[in-house]
Image (cartoon, rainbow over all chains, first blue to last red; front, side):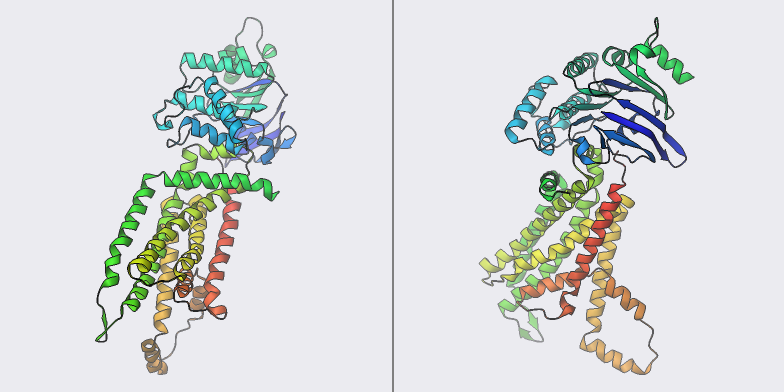
Length: 234
Length: 282
């Protein structure tokens, strides 16, 4: 589903991503882990063609990431998601549907379903300017789910959410995983990752340290957090 | 690139750009202010004016003043268009619309095209409505009908396309305010130099040149080349205003400004697409 080959991204003398290669299979729930500034968000942005890599090749479903068609079946939630404050949550979801060329009646059905899924019934018609950070994040996730994507790329999806919200997101991700959706998760929430994901990669200072199944990374008697700290601290 | 598939995303982004701009309070304030100013000017059409001791007839007054108003609106809307365009990419970036749109199967060129068209349509409508107010005042209140007035307004929209492309491109290369000032500077220099050239072709200026014929002439060739290639924004307005008077233009000379500005629009548009394709979406 996702393939990165020798991807490097340099900003002048700073190497944000250093010769990273890995792949994510269809239906896999994958977590990209790393400390702040490790290069996780850069990898996501390169994958979405928001940033051009200095070298290397990326593809989604066999289509180079530079082609717009490869984003046909991708849902993306940005870290610290923003929505124009002049729109309501409903209008934002409708825009997302229109951009995917979903017809109006189908879009209304999907919006109703998604509003219920993200638990925002009754708030969808108020302006985004009045929403809390967590509510914006929920609508961002809702927009990512529009059009029933095959691949969900989530950059810190639980950012700004309270513990109840985090648990709801985890349950949603588990249900998407059960439906066979491929999930690419960027997260600091190691305990959540350990519960949901099948595979994980840990990067530090732009370099890939490990990429394997969670069960292979985490040895007996250890938690993912222990492995993460051990690998990152060297 | 399939045209039929490319158009829907562009029209949608154009629509969002129009809606988002119209919802801005600053846009509404600017529009209402301009419309009120145009209404306030209507009293000037009915004044008594004397030239060389002779009173001007009402129709001459209306035609002259409405033409002057035409130029003022044309220039004013160019400034407003530059103001509207300068923050469009930054606002989209800060409000998350840029990443929302570009994470969908929409190419960067479609996004940029949608933005250009949205701003161009909006500013053209803005100018057309202001010109229509003048047209209605002169047609209904003063019974002076100038059918070319509205066509002239549409022709002037080429200038607005130039401003949109130039400000969008420069706003990617420098701070927005500097981009705005640069485009404003290009416009002001063009207007002033066109004014100087027009004045130098007057009978008084010609007589002055003949009087100083004995003095050594400075080499103005380079300045003439720069002047020839400078964006002819005033030239387009003058060409458009010639439609108001129902004068037909003959030869390359009068339509050269139109070609000049159109070529600039194409060059700036191409540079904008090229620059945005390498832009980091953050």
